[in-house]
Length: 556
Image (tube, rainbow, N blue to C red; front, side):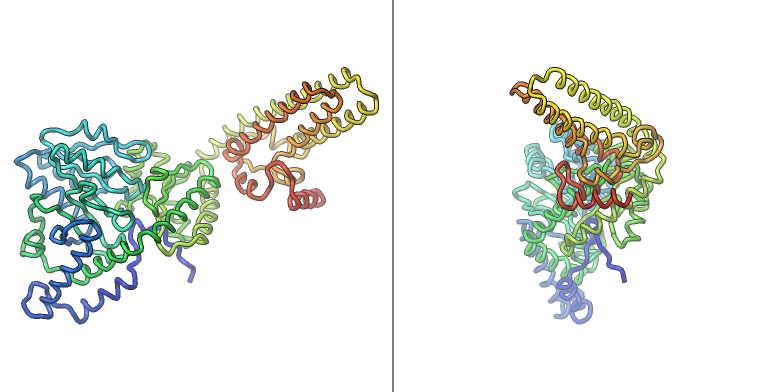
């Protein structure tokens, strides 16, 4: 069976073996109902209490402030709807953001139909909440601020401490959806002024179907599910003992391994981001570059449709997503990407890769190598990309052709002036003059004969690849070598420090120009240029490039 590289840990994680081992006895041996009085059941009540204590300790909370739910979505629904109900006498206004999970946004839509007023605060291009806008939206009737700790799609971590302070300064309850953050970053509810918090077990190697809500003691909140006295009369229903044991074990494991695990994830995440951004042109990193979840990388590839990308990655054994797993059936672009200012056509080309503790550097290399080819293949089928590249090529061709001709003419003029003004002995003049002519001949050959002339200077209406054969296998900018050689020879003819400064400045400015071409212009024009950069020296040939040059010339 082909190896599966799983990079969708934001959607769900593999249940850790120690978590599964801890759960199994509560399916097979210790299966009693915790609400019963006999020992096989009542003992499970103590087990549940122990799991509460584990989670409470992870948050810096009290155990009686932890309530078990069926997951993050239920916790979000409970907090918003029950708070709106319990505090209706104080006000009817809730503040949230435009990039929340749909469990929050759809709950808010529901509440709006019930007469609750909701303000959706915007974010900047990195997905960070605008604190000034947040402050400006506060009213005397505001009862709740709900801002997610870290975004599930782009990974941006919000300034939760500052938001908590703003809420408490105004006597407003503060809730955070920490489904993606719990187990990934340290969270202390007192330090961050958090009144309520949501989390889900399957996001940190626990089982599915179990989550929890932290509700600070003293917060008025009513029951969400009725029918029994479980969870201190706030959530009816027989407790999911195996699930509760699973989430408690997973929480303890997440806290114990957090530092080592996230350090590794950050290193691999940054390596992934660096490779993708450097090797795939027309790519945008979504979310804050530094203030993001340790395992999250989210990209938009221009001229690529996200669903096609996922299908082709799947054929290579790579699992990723194009947004939230909860909206994977929707054809609409991500509301998060639209909120950070991306147009529809770019937002459609998103890819979210979220690492796990088992991810290796070899996995990342394989993924990036596959991604490069897949993106190139998809773009080759895109008429929009073809039209874009044609326009790029047209401008480059005109600019390159004019510039090249001017360089050659200027060298001819400089050589003529050098010859006419030279007062040195005839031997030096002839020697350096012949050297300058040889370098000039090499320059003309490199720019007009070594390159396929029709493709380089005439053909505008097709996708282009950088030419890598012959002298272009020697280094990426052989023309600059010959240019420098010609100017140095003319310096030899002229002599004098003033002329030397002039010629060195000409060489230096030409060098700066090719740096600009190499870093910016050519990678965006030639689809194979990143690979060319990896395999061929910038300016100074090495042993391997000299051999490659001679081999390609001999082959021709």
